[in-house]
Image (cartoon, rainbow, N blue to C red):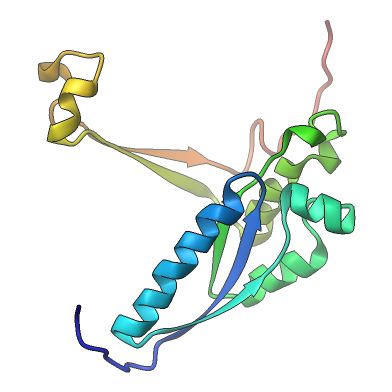
Length: 158
């Protein structure tokens, strides 16, 4: 491994494990952060907050004020996963996914970036012809502040 460089970089992270596989994924991400601390001398101050179904169980709302405030005070947010089938029948304001939408709104997140790259060793796994997919390197920018996410509900008829 590399040598430890104490460059004094320190970061406050709000850690939101969330639901489902989220806590397991976050636990592994924290191991990576701890390794970065050891190897590069950075420091990560981790503060855990509930979101989604975990927050609903704990506080009755999917995005508690304490979580919002903690995220706003942090340098970065580490988010696991949000959503749990036990809340599927809840009205929209009490669904776990509302926590994610409120997090995005609170942080002013305009877009998310979804890279799509097909690596050469995986070309044969594609259902498309190799000559069609070879060299695929695409970045999808998904706008998060309007439309279905935050538009005014207009109702629903059967």
